Amino acid sequence: KVTIQLSRSGQVLRLPLEDIIANPKENISLRSGDVVTALYQPLHVTIMGATQQSKEVDFEASGISLAQALVRAGGINGNEADARAVFVFRLESPKLVPGLAKGPLVDGKVPVVFRFDFSNPATLFVAQEFPIQNKDLIYVASAPVTDLQKFLGLIVQIVYPIQGLTTAGVIK
Image (cartoon, rainbow, N blue to C red; front, side, top):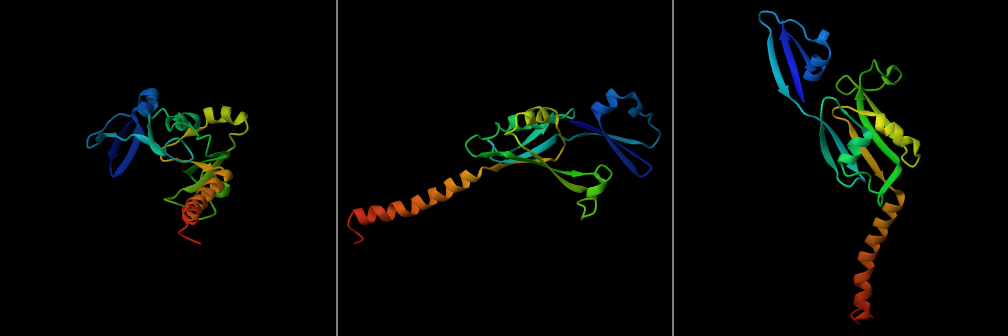
């Protein structure tokens, strides 16, 4: 969760402290005039939709997988979720997705959407290995039957009071 920032000759470089410790090549010698700052910046993913909780989840620099992020939000809501429609929204470097970099960029990055079908058991293996990145958004879509249930519930709320009035003899 700690990022080391080095300011040198007008340039700024940031690296997670964990990367500097793990890779000696990243641990460069300081020069006169360098400014080193330790920044506490928790990484986070936003999880929304048909999960037990919609929330922002902090995670460590070593990262978490899609499966771990969903578990931290209480998991997919089995009563409401469409297991075939779990999405990860991410902004990627144009270098990583050259074929997709044709449209408008967001902060110099390409919007990318990954879709997961959790009705296929093999997807569970993929979810355990799929790395979540800082500022990703995970969205679990509602099942189509959930929308129908919400609509029918609304109809019942409207019709039931009217039925009560006719039964009571108020409306003839």
